[in-house]
Image (cartoon, rainbow, N blue to C red; front, side):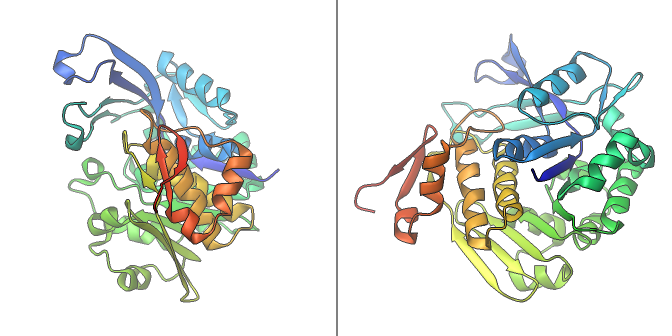
Length: 335
């Protein structure tokens, strides 16, 4: 079975039980959240031997993270538990049902977290070294680069390592709060060291100063493919050989957008690992994202295998006629 290793921070996620402002909340639901572990869970759901590498505190939040990831089929043998530094926490305040267009808001409490201490010592851990050496895919994100100088060095070391048959993917995952007052050109340098780069078109403007495809490809000439996620419109793969593939997004009744980018990454990367072409891999990304867009939470369940196969193999016209609502893939009449 192909092995994938996702490296980064996972935090405890607290959310008001009812769709109310945080100052009015009397109950908070406890879950977990992290871009890289979201991708790890998505890859596990798609049949890969998936692992998450990171650090948590020796606290209830850390235990919750390890238990939940294990329950979703993600290996945690490469996770270090810190006796002194805490697990990071974030609060996600969902959009109000009365004003869904206002969107959800997120508050981070991650400075000085156990994950921010990731560095060369993490790579020296025999469990981590073994996972990385045997991985078909190593998945990283720009979030980790902003956590601490040691975390940045960790990414630089992984990205500079000999591939030996491995693929390294890098999702920009722009977080404005993390890059305030920092040199964001680091993201371009890191992305250009990867084999596969994923970035939202809206993120590209902040991270790279442009949304122009040709300019982005010029800024990052080395990756084998640059995937641009154009929100609800399409996803575009710009290959190093100059070829281009664009697949329109599915029609979706959106409940909440958080986590959809990670689900897209898992879908796309799984297709790539299974040897599919760009069109099929982009479709897998769209399907996985659609499943997450229609639920409250960071990841929605995929359709059953037979239905998923039929969706992915549909004609362009049939693909364009699909509407996703409440996790169901239906064909729009008259489309």
